[in-house]
Image (cartoon, rainbow, N blue to C red; front, side, top):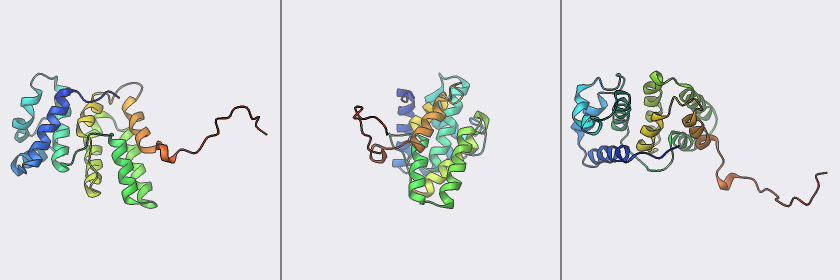
Length: 182
């Protein structure tokens, strides 16, 4: 997946600055967008519009969505994507029924239509918050740009991060091709 644009990274830096300064009023204004269609909470305008005035309405909606989610869990990182965040939640939560439930949520997120994403992402971010797992907010904005790609690039990338093996988990493979299988 493409990396976040400079604008997306700068916007997330702005959100992080609000959190670092503990600007409760700004974060509360951004949280007012939760559960509402993006761009319909006027309290958010002063914190989002300066960054999006030259974007299309659809692009701007992604900034509104991520800003409201950020205000719910203002902890950011610069690596990975939501698949990585879910993987880290799975590890933090342990196994068993929790892992099964988490996987079902993750699959539902991967299957979500664009209009259902705000609700699914709100639940995902609440899970990340409950386990103190940071979110790569700039990458999330960028991923939302490609959500409807016919090849499901974002969904595949998130799945790789969630289910993929790390180098430490990969089995040793004998690369000697001179032996014939028995």
